[in-house]
Amino acid sequence: MDCLGVKNKGRNDKKKMKHESLSTVKSLPKELLVEIMAKVASASVLDLCKVKLSCKDFLHASEDDYVYQHASMDKFALVPLPWFIHEKESSFLKRCKDSGNSEISYREGMVEYFSCFKIDSGLENLKKAALQGHVDSKYVCSMILMCSKEEEERKVGFDIFCSLKTSTCVMRCRKRVKSFIRSMWVNNPVVRSNQECLCHSSMCESREKLKKLSRMSFLIEDEDDATIASCQYCHADYELCLFCKVFEI
Image 1 (cartoon, rainbow, N blue to C red):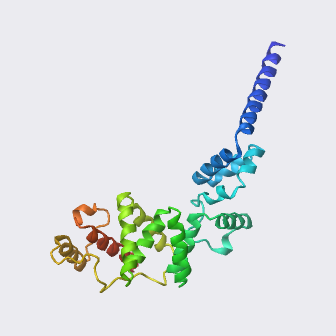
Image 2 (cartoon, rainbow, N blue to C red):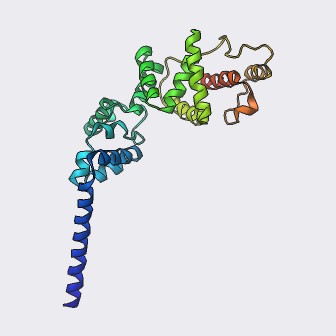
Image 3 (cartoon, one colour):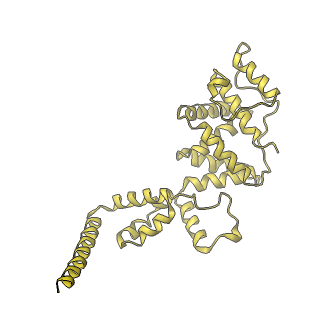
């Protein structure tokens, strides 16, 4: 009887804890539940699926557009092949796209701009993602704009690049973008040969050093820019060289 009593007490305690947990969840405002689900989704889609099954409140909160907008795309191929995508996966990705997921805008923009010759829509998607704070999109936009023949566009691209340098994320962005570009069929490479440098100073020591490195095709990807150039414009010129080098096969 004593053992049976202990077992029953244990079951009752678990039921009580579960009831208290559910009561706590129900007491939370919907906006907070949606924010919690968005945080889970941004970390792992698999965890999102598990949390959705835990209670109806989480399930309802997970259906908010805000959650799909922040859902992580890490478990999905960078360039998904239609014949390998299941119906549920396709439906999930479409919902994320319709909800304004910046990672999907970025990926579609990359494929459209560099692979499908859809230059305008590709750049539009990249800009859309960049405006949402997507750093890799900011990096690609800055490179494309700095390669433009229009002075105003080059200035905008340079300003974006400087903001990325301030955030010290240029090298990480470059590596991720390089990996993406190498994963798809490139039909529209960015080539910057014979284009005017951003640095116009004939007295700039950094510019002369950059010219020598470029002629030698000796571009150091993992070294701090400060050792390459002390001029901000030369920093941008050097990064453009590294970016354009990605398209060399």
